[in-house]
Image (tube, rainbow, N blue to C red):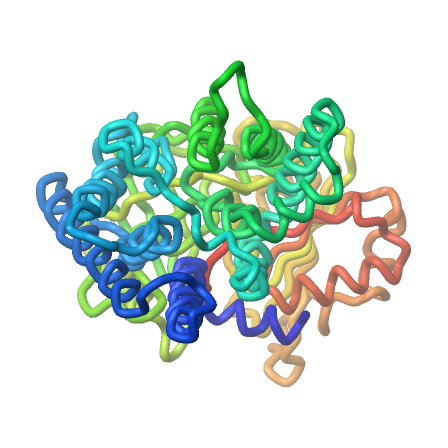
Length: 504
């Protein structure tokens, strides 16, 4: 799995979904040539191309009218999903369904919004509206047994964005609901379950549509409830009287729940100041269009329109480095050689081009019980959520038992030390700095040397078995520290790992 994760970490979530959908469409095209799927392969390609063109043109028009940047991949993702659930065109009479499905899916992102945040999964709401207005519904043809082995690769999306709990509870709720109805109706349980798993779009729906980030709740607990709601309604046998739900209706119902339990905003921010904190780390200060309410340690998705966008897109996930008590939004960003077009454009950002923040998420937050003893372990730019938490504790004068272990290669890479020094004096927080490049250490260095390992942890934190550990930094570092803590007898429940989907 490490090999797979290494590959996944080099690609954005959106690009992964796009490639997966193109892959499924290619498999379907080949199947159609050999008669495994009952489609004309040419019409399959024409249908997908037509939907892509409709979605692209519609998005261009709405983007111009509303003057907002959009994800460069989202248009194609929407078009490809529609291509995989609406049967290919057979005659000219199918054109209105295709036209309005494409237009409505894109239009919903702009029109069906509250405080500039769209409510419904675009594909799901488009299919519902076309079914009502044009009596043409999605066939969900992707849910066939020949396609299932290839659809199962969609689990890579779930792994990429860490939506395991959401998908698990969805599957459990769906299967238990089917089981319940089968028992009541006297149906053959095994046959019904087999048909549901092998001959419906269950897996495609779960991996691709259910996990769509912008319309899912922000935390694991809320995502579990969301999965249960959608799972119950997804079951083909679920009905109220003569009214039976469909996959798209199940998702719409879940979207409504998600809206009420999620942050309901999208912020437009302009750059106020750009500060160099370290040789390759900058802090960006933004003034948001409205006061942002969040929990210290959470992250947001940031859309930044720029020319010549590369394969990594125009969206990134950044942890908010500022505290909710501060007026500005601070983002600490590390830049690399041969970085993405996004990072290059961001480094040249001025105060004229807005950046759009949305999808506030994350469970990497302080426990409600302030008596819990904590250990923060950070590597490099992974310090940003801890800056947010500690600044919040300083501003609210809330004392907690915390030890911060902060690892960097060299001394000049250390950032936010002023905040941590203040926390040591005012809150009694213990801060340990360590450098891993022992050859570049200055003689004046008073901190520790070497990587954070078992010996360092036991020496600095004798009561480590009674602590909750927060890990933040590069994926490789987090995995290494997780293994170290497990070998020390620290349980999974005592370890919280910072995670957000996207390419760093």
